[in-house]
Amino acid sequence: SISTSESVSDIKEFRNLARFLETPYKILTMKKTIVTSLLFLSFALSSVFAQKLGHVSLDSLISLMPEYKTAKDKSEGKLKSLESFLMNLKNENDMKVQKAQNDYEKMSDIERKNIEEELAGMQQRIQSRQAEAQNEYQAYSNNMMKPIYDKAKKAIDKVAKANGYKYIFDTGIGNVLYSEPADDVLLIVKKELDAMPPAKLPDSGATDGGIKNTPPKGGK
Image 1 (cartoon, helix red, strand yellow):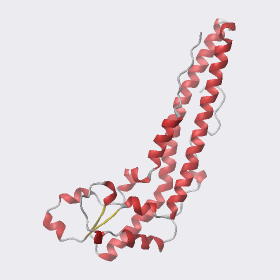
Image 2 (cartoon, rainbow, N blue to C red; image 1 turned 30 degrees about the vertical axis):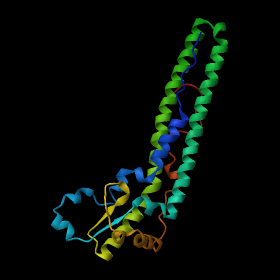
Image 3 (spheres, rainbow, N blue to C red; image 1 turned 45 degrees about the vertical axis):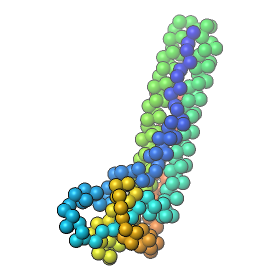
């Protein structure tokens, strides 16, 4: 008799991965546009000590911005939508597998071959849609966070120039082993952010491309 197809849409695993992608502090490509590379630490000590250095926890700074909560809520909504889409595909597959098992003995050879091919194709389609959902979520989250990082970068730049800082390091990435509290510019940058207009986030619909929210019936 026909065997039950293996689960091909591990929603829990997808949600864990999506949450990792959602965390703005993990988006390393964006961080590189905001913080000065720690390779500056390789400069001669005499040169470093001659400069005015500052530091800030970018993690903490971003979490204080009201735009971050808005972006996080929108990303969470996107995540739930994609999870629902994947769950619907899995449920549709499970129902077809169950029906095929119930009717298998009554099927002709050509009918059995047809249903087996159909179920194999649907399994491949689910795997493909799961990968697409992960990519779509990552792109959506990145697009939501980019204006927030751009605003934070602008505020850090203004504070650095106004206060004579040559370099500002990010203590949130774990490579700064010691820093003076007096050199923490978080509150200064936060004050600068408060004086700036809100970051303009993209419309939800502008980043909703990709997989459809309603799974097609049968086939790929």
